[in-house]
Length: 203
Image 1 (spheres, rainbow, N blue to C red):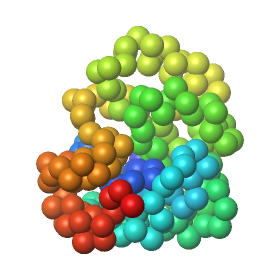
Image 2 (cartoon, one colour):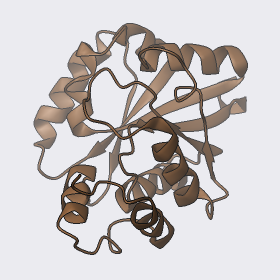
Image 3 (cartoon, rainbow, N blue to C red):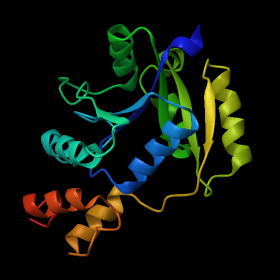
């Protein structure tokens, strides 16, 4: 029975750096979908992004950020992997480790429009439900139309309606370079770590 499985959310990404938007999204999914926990999975070698901070420091920022949240957990399944990190392979490994779990892959509407270009998207759809956050800069009709297309490939999509979060890691890195405060953008402990380690500063 599906309702007997452990419901685990997955928040993946480079987290370069992790910010309050990630935490709000994960908590919203946790409460709305009655998940048992949310796994934060920092990527190791990200084949889709360049100039990413070293894995060890991104992992440490995630660890610091989620420390106060008992419903969140850190997974090093991608950080410890050699070579590229693929969501399909991560889900395959997690399913082998915990076959009684049901996985919920949490993503923004932007990722929904890109997921067909990811490695083995059909395997992703087979191993996890897709939880798509509805951003108000995306037209809902277009999102649902895209969702219908993906359902034909086997996707099971849940739409998570929540307010738009005006935060991005790119903007936060730019703020740090300009020596502007990021205390409203990231947990205070993460801001302190970034300052202490002199991350994202101009060399």
